[in-house]
Image (cartoon, rainbow, N blue to C red; front, side):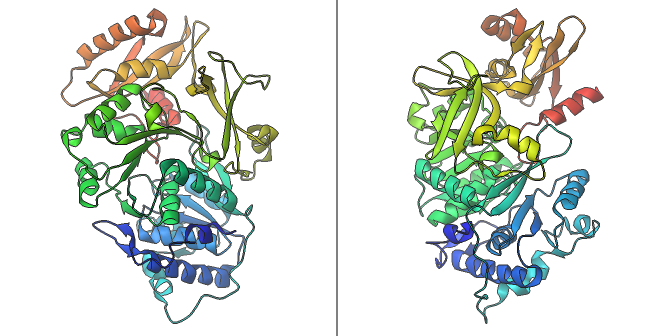
Length: 496
């Protein structure tokens, strides 16, 4: 089944708006007709089984193009407009698209690579056609056909192309709707880019249930988010750790503002330190806070922690979402016992088909037909999972493996700290030494905060886990999805 047909199964004729907001509004019926028109055009002009690039910020045009490419039997390759020239060229050379959809800002960059482009302006005539019905030979596709390829930022020089099928999208959408109890009444404030699997999951789930989206590409202006949540009566907000950290400690008004319609928030894209979660739930005790965990290789989501379990299981990612089995396995492939550590391994219909043009890495990652996440974790007596860190990110200080996460947790417990990242740097004596990169609230004194961090780490963690070096920054490097990127952090360290 084509995932686009699945998404619009109950909503294609709705007159209500799929997209709300100050700049764009569009109804379900209009989007559906536009998708059919454009899919028909793509099928007639280019056939099917092509990889078609889509690059741009969140917009109605992005939504229409994304859905039309998949509906036409082609594979969509969404890219963030901030993608580097090197990565863009790599993706173009790898995918060899016959055409690319692009916003006007990125049009010249894409044209310079020799690609034909369709922009919002050039596609207007196609979207607007009402005097014909799309051809009846729009292809039917099998559930295992590749619907999209998402290129991950990762820690390697070039990104990996994660191939996701129509079945993967349908399965993950079903699961997320179930555990979040989504309905046509839900209105989501979207600050996550649709080029990112977390952002796409918001699009998929709300189309399926007939809900609405408010698109906000200006999170840097925090008040726009606050205004959207109130004005459009948003019931949901989804963010990565940096979003919550900024809202809680950079905004003067967020925690004191009332959001009577806000039912729940979701957090994924990395671990949000417990002090921030506690700060949010204390400020908004009636808003459900869902801690979630996932990977692009899992279409988006792998686990969630029910809000009712949050007080007793703070720090846990919970267990597998409906339809997903999560295990923590030791190096022999056996389930770990409480207190032991191992790798999180997942199975389910949401697990990717593999990496584009990389069968060797695919075989390693999908060993035994299960997704080996590379995340190291432990479990408690009730089976709840707690991530310790990624194997490649542990710091070896004098031979002892130290997780940066536990040090970061102590540092951000200070209310003066907005964000931090702990990394290992070369040390002649210890092999590696701990360095803390710290972002402070405006007006704070770095020297006094450094003393506080030192004392807190000494008391809570012991001398071995006290940072040896500190650097105070305006912000921690992030990738285009708003997630911390260790590659960018290493680049900063190497230039200092």
